[in-house]
Length: 595
Ligand code: ASP
Image (cartoon, rainbow, N blue to C red):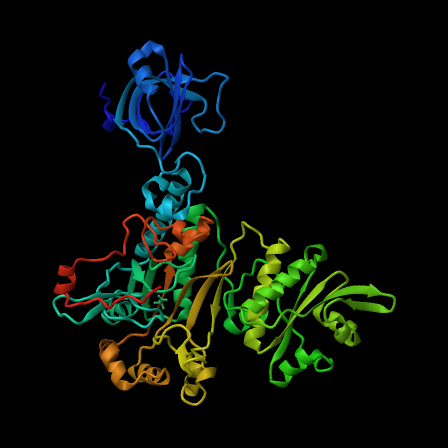
């Protein structure tokens, strides 16, 4: 018999002991159905939880129908809340009660399922994404997207409360140089030309500042055609913001306060402010990377000085070439087996490294005695070395000779592996910090030219401006990256607001005056007509959700994500289009290369 499903009295996770005796109307999905002959039970699920329904022969029609139900059928019921007495189910929030059903209405039946919603068996990713609507029914997925909503809401509310204006920027636009490949959209009206989907609204938000909006913030989709890894998606969402008349501190202060709000609203966690700040130089020296995971130690130590005295070719060569020898000291000998260190050395080789020289510290009759690995080369300076790096009996010391950049890169990898195997990384710790003073430019060895460390609109530090022409590699910038547990969560900068400086930076980047005019004339124009000093930041919303949900992949926190091959198994995009559509665009397809 029809049940007024639009007049649900409660949701499925709401009923408790005080509701006993009440007549209720519920609707939802059959999570499980059990038929005990005389009595049938159904666990009814919606986004709030599960209520157990009981069907008895007293209400013969309802009982009969209930016995025909299968998982994921959609039903609405009327009934009376009764106590379960002693038979409570502590696993359910509603476990003290059940509903004795008097009337049931089957609203829709479910075909045999490609995978069950009610268990956590992980179907293959293609199947999960092909039937994403089913996968999203699972409570843990519902949880993630409700967390995502809380985070987005916290961000929106925060910025509105702080005087930011939300304005949309175009999707059909011109390519901006964020460093990735653009997604192109052919124009029909001007056949032969293309829009690019924005990699970020960078230039538009700068224009807003020049237009006098003072403070802008937008949660916006961005598009980058990159090879996909677990933490990349072709389209992703950023919180993008910009402020006028500010210095670095002002942007960082506002962002910190927003991050504090996100943690509070989303997870009820208090983040103390101000957040620590570290220069890029210090981060790299101590942790081997500009986005350090500061939840654990194992910092890099420089032993180049001591190694001058050592007769070991591999170290000597590195030092003679102007390189360094750095090391990490780790305790916890039992876990650092030969098998583990050999595998680690292989991983480094896979990254382009040469191996992983190491030694172990022991106590000999005459004092410190080094064992295994390169012990024999280092024994003459054993005592001095151990004193300098604080190594004691039982420790293993991992060395890396090479250019400073290589030593840092490889030891960062070693540090991360050691942190994991030695169980040094606390799970529920949130280590946030700012990294500042990056080099404005990075030398691109392949292309033999300077590239922006962030993007070409990042301002140099005032005190370094004089070196821009003479020693560009030394110039530091006004950028700031926000790092959480070793992941870059946000990046931004104070921008160049003077046309002469912007033009000079373009030239250093090898962008000719003509190319600059062709690509960025509108920006250079805007800089001519009264540009206030300004700066901002963007943070990857998906990545924040992934971190806060402690999810493994960005795909878990995006409702309809793409696979590693940038495909959507749900809609089958991208897919071929008709000849007519191509003709309208004056496009013809080249034959595809044979795979
Ligand atoms: N537009 C930059 C990005 O998307 C962030 C910024 O500088 O504000 O990486």
